[in-house]
Length: 279
Image 1 (tube, rainbow, N blue to C red):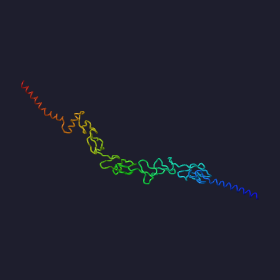
Image 2 (image 1 turned 135 degrees about the horizontal axis):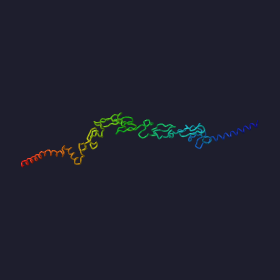
Image 3 (image 1 turned 180 degrees about the vertical axis):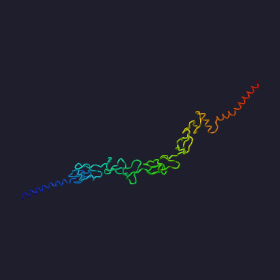
Image 4 (image 1 turned 45 degrees about the vertical axis):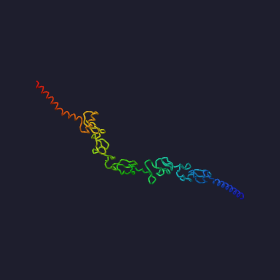
C-alpha cells in the first residue's frame, strides 16, 4: 500500500511538472506580437499557438479583416483579399466610374471615385449626373429644352429637337432643326430652283454668280441676261453700263441708223432722176 502511495505521488509530481512546462510554453507570444490563442491582427485567419501562427479559420474567420473572404474549405481554407467581378480589389475604385468594390460587390460612390467625362457627382454623392448643357450662355439641365427653343440637353450634349422644343420666331421646323425659309421653301443660304435667286435671311435675291442662270441666259453681275453668244469683256462693260443708265451704245447706233437711212435714200433717188433728164 505504501508503495502505491509513493508511486502515485511520483506520477503526480511528473504530471505537474509537465503541465507547468506546457503552461509556460502556452504563454509565449508569436513573432507578430499576437498572444497565445489570440487571432493575429496582421495575418487574416491565423491564430497564435505556442509561439507559432496557424491557419484556423473556424476560430479566426476571414470576416475579422474587412475586405477579405474565405477561399477553399477545411484545412485548405485561407483568407484572400476580396475582388469584384471586374477584378477591382476590395475598397478600390473601379475603372468604371463611379463604381467602388465593397466586399466583392460594385457599388456607386461618386464622392470617392469621381465621375466620367461630362458628368458630375449628384447631390447624394453616390451617383453621377450630366453637367448641364450651355446654349450660348444659357444653362440647360439634362433632359430639358433650352428656353431659346429648338435644342434639348441629351446626355450632356445640346441636340436639335424641334419636334419637342419648337422653333424661335422667324424659323420653321424642318425635321429636328429650325431653319429660315424663303417663300418658295428654299432654305436660308441655298439657291432657289428659280435661277438666279438665292435665299438670304428669308428673302429671295439675285445671285447669278453663285446660283447660275436659266438656259439661254448668262450672268451679268448678279443678274442674268439673254444672249446668243458668249459675252466678251467689252460686252460685259456695255451690259453693265446698260444696267446703270438704261441706255446702251448699241441702242444709240440703232437710233442713228434709223434717222440717217431716209437721207441716204433721198440722195440715191435724186441722182437717179438727174441721170434720166440727161438722157
